[in-house]
Length: 337
Image (tube, rainbow, N blue to C red; front, side):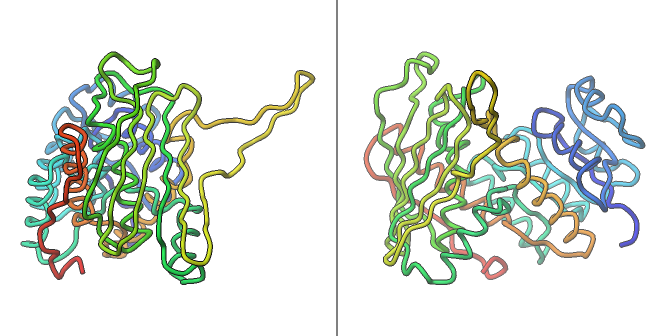
């Protein structure tokens, strides 16, 4: 493909607007051809200064807009299934922000729809697979130099939760990144989950169970623990330590810019995911554009999105009812082997 890949971006909120900027300014080989958002004023603001973009209130109108070759879905999770199926019906390649679909039954319907096509068409936006530090950790674990992985210790902290954030969303929205990262790093499925609840921080809104401590068991006998704390008040921090039979390795502690003045020295702390993972998002979208232009689909697919939804559902049940909850996964189709 010699011409620019025309992308329809669905959703012009915080994530969608950032992807519009990325496609316009940071990624070669692509252009924003159309944007859809029920709030068309927000969409117009997101594409200000971007030439040749049509703005729509409805997702399907954007998919049918002239010059659209592919779709980037950055709308709220409940809208993903309909958008994915509409893109599949038009044969359009998709990069879908996580979650693929919030509930596992809907995610499985997307898997089945792609299976009927007989080929992969969608990639899911688990951007940690494109973070340089996580890639190095994955290579190290795959090399076998540290022996068998025994445990992963994960930290995931946000400054503050957005409005209407629920206790369940700590698991099915925030921890979904650790779910995929653990499956990818270890090459194992997550088979059971337990959620422990310390006393809530006084920084959390009334009724929000924050922080939480989530423990996953894997098909290979490893354990994965996640401290999820979405109202830490002090920064966006994500780290992962792999403890193996012959050593350990930790990522996420990379130093940021240090500023020295007459008042002393200070170190910057990232305040949200778009800062901490800016490079990972750039690399993810570049890889998707390059693969799509070459007629290929790479990266995490709809099966990974389904698995993450199924594990997260088990995690929410563990949070709400207590105790250990097993994960019920459908048989993995050969297309995703």
